[in-house]
Length: 431
Image (cartoon, rainbow, N blue to C red; front, side, top):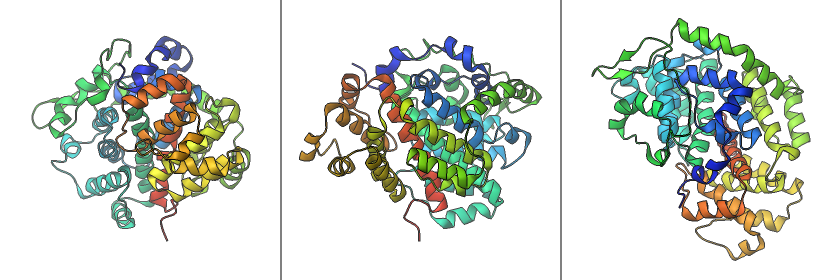
């Protein structure tokens, strides 16, 4: 009996050989950054806009490759914040990858484990932890503390990295993607004693079909104070591999962003008028590349012809997450999107109150597919996700693999927006 969504979806994963044929530049870039091509890729490509979403977010929200050259926020601090975010969200898959990422970008083992941190590292950790729990416990004072150590622009890059992890944490934890053996080998000795474990990401068959081909040879190996071998730090080899694959990755990105207005006000208006989702982050974020990436993500996720789920049901899925996150902005936008898609007020109200643990009599208004989608959204909206046997069974019975991936991707996008909205005071709870 499957215990994770990944096990239900496993037969429909796209082969790595097929992915490498079309997307080798972006796969190779991630391999350089963390020493392995992640097992999430074959799942995301089950619903192709999901794969595009992932590959639009990661390089643009991490300011790559510029960050590797020392432009923008210190890359070790960004990496440490990403790791902290993953641990706060209880995503063990991302915790392994971000630990490797942080160490490769120059974070010390002591900073990662919390044994010793500078004032700047501690400020970044505090913000990352506060933004990454559900519900969050972020306060503007924590943000001011971060800005005492970093410029406003660098502060935004650090927070953007934490928000990006909102997408990754949610998707990997919700699906239960199996963790690559290379990633376990990289970091388990260091973070195992801090409470990290492979958890649901080590179900039977882990690594058997991965064929990840991680190299792990991007620099000189280092050791922590206790003599444990750590992932290698960035070197000239790292940069050469990045720039070898960057042109191909840029070509893919341009294709996925084609036709988007470059002016932020025009872009925001275009997304609102065309797709029914008015996102103020598109005019709030300071960096053009993050604004454009987010606009492209919203376009790919809210384009009716690309949706397997249907925008009407997708809006209700978003409403479930928005209420779970207590994000008034996302509640408002999800409600408007549902109404625009023809969903009745009665159904919107039922979805807003939907709870698989406390079934409402109004839930009988919903068909089996809708109930399965909303139950899945409810289970994966918490951090960590609470996917149970009933959820897995309902998904297997009532939803296609593409629909399941689409639900997880959209909830993950909304978690990214939620984290940024909280930081910028756009969630509806700030004066």
